[in-house]
Image (cartoon, rainbow, N blue to C red; front, side, top):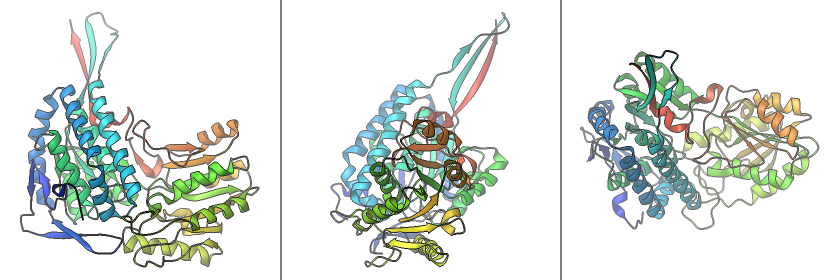
Length: 483
């Protein structure tokens, strides 16, 4: 791995401002999913290390909370600037450990940095209220204060953006964190910690615990009553476990969980816009996003034309090592992910789906999978109920608006949905009827630091980003003053 700044490639965990090994010297390997080669071995910490990190975070948080918001904002701004300045190196690290094309990695870094910038600004805008009192001898005030130390567990699919989206608002609010990155992608997290240190974030305020025993580390975070909030992005199954484990200490929770995003295309849609939106939503990060279109519903009047054109564009996607020039799609993250995608495709074909393009392992082998378009999908297939998390577009046919809404909502999940129509009335009707926390209309890309990100039903709790995101890390204190 050739970096302009080799010191960004770290192999030790980061606790209380120091780079540390596991007490027993254990390590685990981080591998490049494009070729299976070992990149580096990283410190494999256990649950005891979580306690040490919390020991450091508690006093550090008190001091950090007492730091003027303007100063916290300036430090976060320096962190943002350092992330942007080191985009090339960060992108190489990200692509090497995760697999996405370099162009996508650079886009993710800019996206992640935007949250650091945004919440640095929001740090200066945390305000309480003076309320009108119903009694002449009292004055009523509210303060917003940092919740304290929070635990964060982040996924492998966006290893820089998800950390920035969780850590930046917490630090802006005056909290400290203990973060467990995904074992597949710890290097991006450690590089971010290195840049945070250079920016001036004090020791103990940001701690990174690397390790492969995610259940034990997660349980240690949930069980410690000094952790006052947990924020997690991952599967609904694990989210439920974390909620149960946090119940005894009554933590505040932010959970971004599984998705099963529908993409609805009506007869009156602009077909060029709909195809482009479907491509962006479905194939970004090889389909390994929690908001990518998992079920594509197309009205029967344009079904055949939409499917034909989507297949043509999908077949033209250049699959390869994300570090190579001109690559549009990299490998799936690991064998587990690859096998799930293959199982979903095989299940659909066995139940009558037709393959327009793809449908099998890519000629590069490993975990590379062909961009795939399937038609004649129905609700009996796994892809209707489960999140595929791969480059497979399954197209379902519908007749009218009511049928489309019913099918789209027929899931336990409710994170993101997409809608393509040129009818303004339908735009509002369907957007309001869809049971999702996010609805994107006539676009396949919606996420930014400005909009609130989060789901309903079994897709989670709370919102990340936007003016609402910092509230997840604040407590409201009511003060009644007799005069």
